[in-house]
Figure: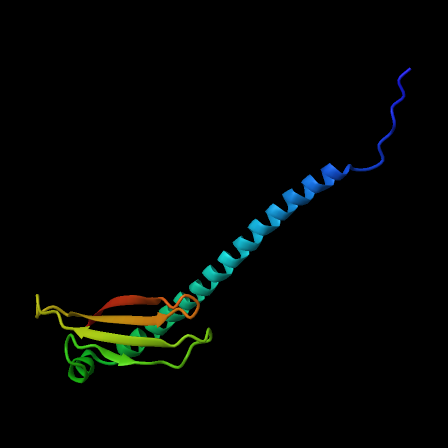
Length: 136
């Protein structure tokens, strides 16, 4: 007659294997969280830079083109530094007015706006450029 003992718990080996699997899973999640946080911050910087570029474009588009062409030398970059953003990054904003010399009788000139910044975590330079045709 075989009598089997009823098991009321886990063996030590089973517990150790479960702890190893759990620790591997938690370590991979920690790495994923660090990557996600960095990407989220980079996305915030990019959004803020795009907003600054769009703001400058809207301000320039409010001016008549005759004022823009008289105020800014063609193909010479104008630079300003807006106040530090909500993310604490200092941005540099430059814009260039380019008259349409290929077809001078047309009514479209170009404004190019570039916003640059240095990522504080990785110390890498970044920039975003917006090009817009401006009607006469």
